Image (cartoon, rainbow, N blue to C red; front, side, top):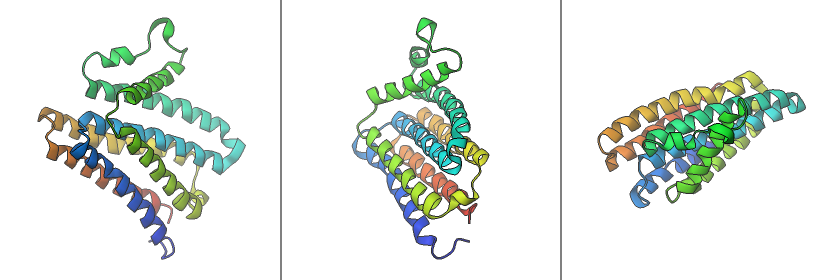
Length: 221
């Protein structure tokens, strides 16, 4: 169990996380967000988590983390690129994946083609996102940044961290969170994306986030 001194810090980070995760409900109710907007936002959150993972790695080992951080950028970036094209194809209709997939002379060399997929996916989202999606993405960026400061730095979680554990954590989160979100999204799409089920999907994501947040930080208590 966390000590009394750690409770307020963790509760602040968790409260901010929940508050930011309520933004999609406002988007559904007042900004005409659809299923695609919600799932795309949750995919964008993966990039935020990757960014802060790199910061943790560099803080943990300084210059010694440059090689594993570079490897993580390439591997996780490629993973997110493929995942992003899949998400956009799932939510954007037939043919979109083919348009975004690099081919011919325009494609980047070797493994970097997957990073190009990531860049194209982000560019497409920024060009076509529903109102408020980018603002919600910024909110998630601030939320994870607050958690980094309160839990990782001030809470001393870095003292118990290891490079390999830091590198694997984002993949585990995606496996749990996005399998549930996408599975639920398919069901909602099949039913015509009724408003109540879109909100239920957001509530499911909040519940999963709370569970993953507590599990991650209790592991260091």
